[in-house]
Length: 118
Image 1 (cartoon, helix red, strand yellow):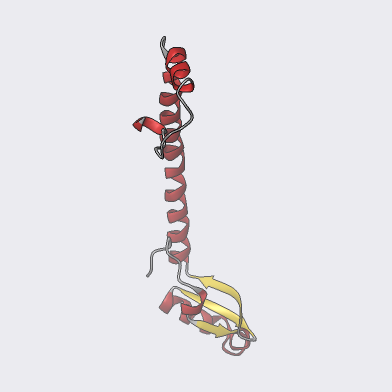
Image 2 (cartoon, one colour; image 1 turned 180 degrees about the vertical axis):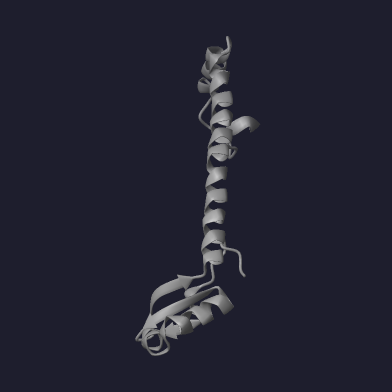
């Protein structure tokens, strides 16, 4: 089984035509699903549906939930970094540092003054 976070392209999935679903019935489709974990149902060679096994579905849902769990942690880290930089404006000498920076000539001589490197 492939990782649900890297889903197979539709072109690589085992296929069955909608007419074969009618001809072989649900049992035939489920044999393909149990063997491959998923099957692409086509109608006139156009992708129409993907049928997943329950294990593929559970793995996909678990992967989505795990990925979503990382989002708040990432946002919290970004918020913390922003708050730390913003806090530097609350220091006693922040106004003096900002005025000093603004009073410097606009000519940067090809050098960029930005971020923590200036």
